[in-house]
Length: 129
View 1: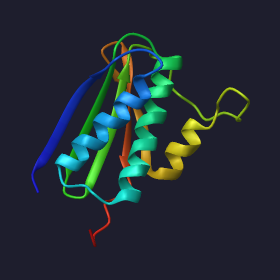
View 2: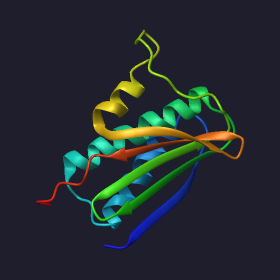
View 3: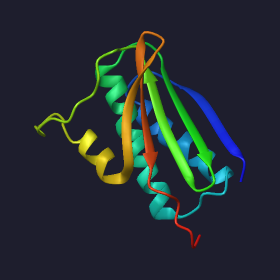
């Protein structure tokens, strides 16, 4: 399989996580990723990343998907340089990073045009699909 990439600007506001989820799952389906559990896990990661960008980031939000074979990386960039961190859950939030860690092979943050890009490597796509 060749390298596949998609870069999408995400509309700001409360509808951003849902729009990003729909776009990501459509891109993955178009690339042939159809395992429901795996795609659902990816959708949760996308939703959490975009929710964090809307709540704590700034500026425009960019969603990127990269695939090489069964390895997929999801990233979300925003205009804030503040690095996300795990925190204790409360009535407002605090579960996003824990969910991302539970559903991925790892994540990191890199500088991106004065802001940041959070990159998440998803668990490998199931081989029997």
